[in-house]
Amino acid sequence: MNRLLGRLGGVLLLSLGFATAGVSGPPPAFACDCASSPDDAAYAARADAVFVGRLAARQQPTPYTSSLDPEVLTFVVSAVYKGDVADEQQVVTAVDGASCGLELAGPGPHLVFARIDPRPQEQSPNDDQLLADLCGGSRPLSAAGPDPGLGTPATRYPSAPSATPTTASSPTPAAATPEPPVETTGSTAVLVVGAAAAVGAAAALLVWRRRRTG
Image (cartoon, helix red, strand yellow):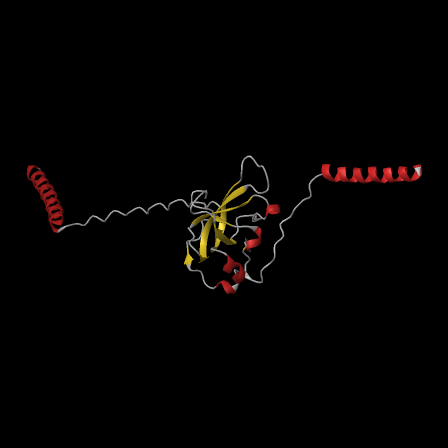
């Protein structure tokens, strides 16, 4: 009987130890689990705004408290397929992909599917901000472009300027303008001929006087 009670006590203590370890151990890690859509048209049907743009700025929360903290992404938009989208559009997402935040690396271009903030206007951080998450279909745009099911863009904006600085070429110096040739007018020619005749007459007179005196 004593042996049985001892064994039961040991099992109870062992079970209690496992339970305590489970409570005091680290919390389980959660990951964003998305159900994929067949194509971009299906993502667009659930979105309020669909556009292509380059990621120009990323405003991360300070201080960082959790993966759910909001991050503001600013896109320079080149094409709009759906919704009211500005040429520079802000999109709010969770800062970490573990909480289904957008995981867009590099400037892009990116294809973005976003929705309007469902909160009342007084609680929304900005009227022109949209919301997007990892499960909404947003991704870097491949060279093949968006799915043909999206159709043609409803609006196109000028392409974003390149981040690579351009080398300014030095201005070409203006060619020297040649001076116009001096034209000899008729009056000038008369003066030249007259002067030559006067010189000749003076020389002849001088010779005649020398002969006479000689």
